[in-house]
Length: 262
Image (tube, rainbow, N blue to C red; front, top):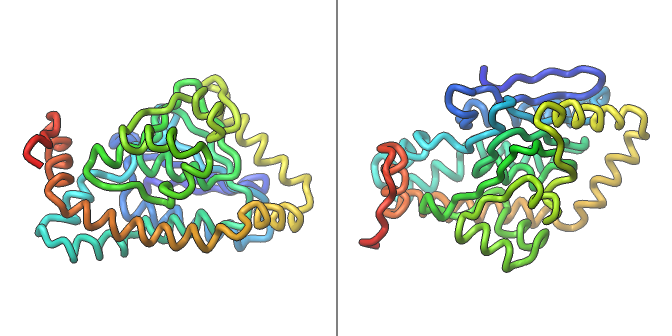
C-alpha cells in the first residue's frame, strides 16, 4: 500500500509513500487517506493527525495517467461523472470534516492537490526545499478542493490570480509570508518538528480543541463542500476538452504542450 497509516502517542500519521511515481496519488490512495481521516476523527484516543510524504517529495498530485484514462472515450458527460465520483472527492470532504487538528509536514514539491490539501490543514510546516505549485490551467483544467474560494480569501484576489492563472510556483518562504504555512525548517527537521507540534495536543483539552477548530471554520464549512462539488463538475468537463487532452498527451510524451490552435 502506498499510503502508510500509523498511530503513536495519540497522533495518527498518514504518509504518502509512492516515491517511484513521485508520490502521485491514485484512486486507491485517496480511499486509504479518506478512511484514515474518518477513523482518526472518530477515535477518541487520537488527538491529532499528521500528513506527510517521503523526504524527497510531498506529492506530485493526481496521477496524470488516471486523467488520461478518465477521458479515454472522449465523452464529456462520462468524463465529468467519473471526476465527480472520483475517490478524491470523499478524501476532500473527509479532510474538511476531520474534527481533530491536522498538521502537515512538507518536503520537496507539493503539486496540484499536493498543495490544495494544505489549504485545509490547520498547521503547515515546510522544508526549505518545499515548493508549492497549482498548475491546473497549464493542464487545461480548473482548480479543485475549493481552492477558487479559499485561496483568494487567504491571500487576496490579485495574488491568487497570479498563482492560479499563470501557474506560478510558491517557495517555502513565500508561502509563510502569504499566510499559507506556519514556518520553514531545514529539510531534516520539518517532520520531527511537525510531530512535536502534533503531540502538544495530548496536553490540551480535546473538546475545547475540537470546538475551537469548528469555530475557526465558522459558517464556511457548507460553502467549502458546495464549492468542491461545483469545481469538480467543471474540472471533469475541462478534462474531457481538447486543451486538457493536449496537455496530458504532451506530459506523457515529455514534450511542450501546443495550445496555438485553440
